Image (cartoon, rainbow, N blue to C red):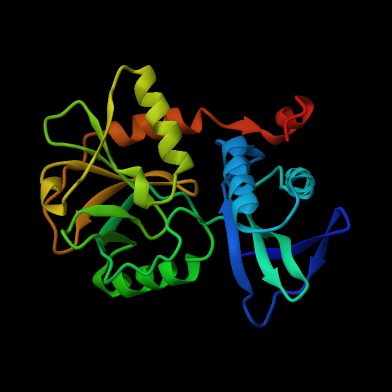
Length: 268
C-alpha cells in the first residue's frame, strides 16, 4: 500500500515521516476516492468536525481550513482511501492527513463473532481503531474477513470496521441495529435514504444472531460500499445470490460527486 503522512501546520499540509511510535488518536475519519469521486464526502467531513469539536480543543475554523486543504490534496486519479485524524501530540491536539492507496473493491465477505467488545468510545471513530483491528486479526484464522461485535445476549452491534444491515427472510423491510451504542455510519445513512426513496422502510431493532437464518446480510463501509456476507462462522446459514447487493451497490456509487465539482460549488 502506498501512503504518505501530512500534518496541518500554520494553515498548510506538510509532508512528515511516519511516527515510530503511534500517537493517541482522538478522532479519525476516512472515505474512498475513486478517480476523483467520493460518496458522501460532506457527511464524512461533518461527522469528523462534530467529533473533533466534542473531543478536542481545536477551533472550528482551523478544522474547516484543514478539511479544505485535504480536499485540494486528494488524488484525482486512481483508487485511494485517505484518512483524516486529530491526534494527541506533546504540543496538544494536532490534525493530520494520511494519503493511502485503497485495496481492490470487494463484494463479498465471511463474518464471525468478535471474541469481545474492546470499544471505549463506540460513538466516536478513532480511539478504538487499533483495538478493533485486533478483532479482525483474531477471526482471520477462521477464514473470516470481518469480526461482528455482539452483546451479552448474542445480538448484533456492529462490525469492527463496518455496519451490519439485514434483509430478513421473506421480508421487504431493511433491518438496522439500534443506533445508540455504535458509530453513526455514513454509508448506512445513505443506503437508508435510498431505501426511503424506494418506499422501503428501514426498521431499527435488536437483531440476535439466531434471527439471521435465511436472511441477506450486508456489511457496509465507506471503503467497499456493500459487501454481501456469504457465511457466518459458527452462525446460521445466510441467504446469498439474490442479486440485490449489486443493484444497491450501483445506486450507492451513483451518489458519488467529483472533487472538482464540489470545489466549483464552493463546498467545504
